[in-house]
Amino acid sequence: MKLSQFKFDLPSELIASHPLMARDECRLMVVNRRTGEVSHHIFKDLLNFFDDGDVMVFNNTRVFPALLYGNKEKTGARIEVFLLRELNADNKLWDVLVEPARKIRIGNKLYFGDDESMVAEVIDNTTSRGRTLRFLYDGPHDEFKAALYALGTTPLPGYIHRESEPSDAEDYQCIFAEHEGAVVAPAAGLHFSRELLTRLEIKGVKKAFVTVHSGLGAFREIDVEDLTKHRMDSEQMVADQTLVDTVNNAKDLGRQVCAVGTSVLRAIATADSMGGHMKTYNGWTNKFIFPPYDFDVCSSMITNFHMPYSTMLMMTAAFAGYELLMEAYDKAVAEGYRFGCYGDAMLIL
Image (cartoon, rainbow, N blue to C red; front, top):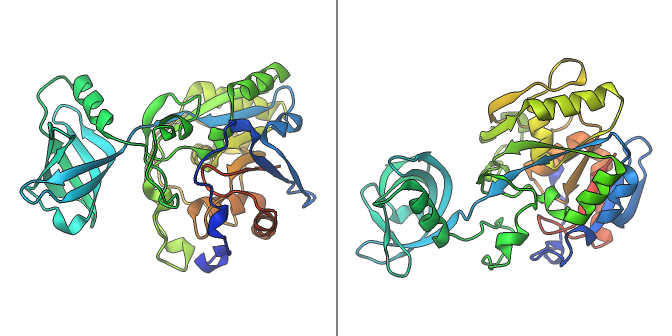
């Protein structure tokens, strides 16, 4: 398919800048792939679409406060530093993005905090905006990590045109988040409240977890019209035996397996095995999914409403069917659904 096929007109006022007060009270559009029917609900109505023995798979990654602001030595210029991942704990090496990149060269020192007590040295260039930083901190690693994160803020997506607020530290985190490593929240999971999870459990719906440390690759601009030429950034993922056993057992019993979010859908597709089953997987995935694509394991998915041209939109279209999804998006815009990570949700059956 072509990049231009994923353009649609999205009024800026439909991009949610803040979440609703109650996680599970956003709107829910339900799209039936078999009948083409589209219906409108509230997210906690999700309970009505799942039964005893069905499985929901969540991404239990935890977002860390990856966005820092520092000052360059001598000039004092304000520099934005986006922490991507820790490369070496002993040497306190981090892979980061910097802005404005043109001002940051190898050998430069950056100072963080009101007292400038946290110092980092640029030791390598990785991409046009990418750098490797070595933090100059005397002390144990846990103490360093705590001090570094205390300086950081929640890394909201760029389409939310505001700086992060203290409330985002909780709002932009799933309540079941456990394993630290993501800079992008698995947005579909943000809608689940503890009450809704409990009600699903009482009904007999099983929870299972995959870990995908979502990075900025999903938001990287696609610069080719032919989607077969686009290359996704790799993300670390773990699909353990407990997840595999839960999903494969549900498949054997003919029960529903629901991917909660595009990160989960991609991870399950990466760990796809023979006969519509999963296998364990511990490594990296750069799988790029766009229509047409056959999903063997998942029978349903929950997702948010995504931006034009985004890889998440393409993956959702692969699952729902391109024409049906784009028709649903036209309805979402007409009905005033909220888009983005803090917006409304869609259930595709």
